[in-house]
Image (tube, rainbow, N blue to C red):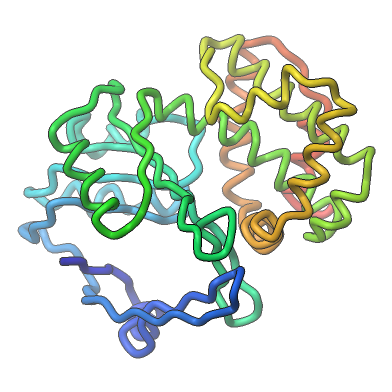
Length: 293
């Protein structure tokens, strides 16, 4: 039993047309009508609130969520470096969970194109989420069951804060590399110098995280940036950037995340200062994500 909260023109569009998505593999157009609401009243009751918005918007809705006296489970999904702390200005430790959606995409004209798996018809892009202290509680299992009941895979993370920080260490260089080539992922794949810089940037970011205490690289594939020679990494990530998944998830999405990358980069600068590690390759690629170079 799902309700979708939206406001203004977005509410009107979704109420009229439903949620319309285009499958990035097949081009199939999917339209789903769900129950729409325009506001969250102080006494509205929901078992789970999922806040799937950009970083700045997620923080902006915290006062609205805090005004509700019944909410016990609030899952914020999306990119983040700063961890849980800023949510506690409004919400309790017991209310907050963090996560990240495995599906991704972006706008192609008026179409919202998405991919949620490695291959057509293979829905294997999980939702990652976890508790503040890494424990698995009764509610953790209930939330897992909600997603899996809808056919969405789930990874419950023991250290979701570290997972999100390592995701930035991968996402920011990837975004920068794509925008360096004006959103053309095929051009990234063909540019050996960019691929080398990309690998070194990811290593630099990961070294910062390890230096400040985040020892477990997440997701495990992130280890590929470290143990293999750069020349082998160039071959591997050439294939990575030529995939349809990356073309949709990063090529279409990269141009829309500049503000978010800037916010997270400012937070990452704090960790860099603590680690006392220079990151020249990361710095250069992040500049492409922040605007024209």
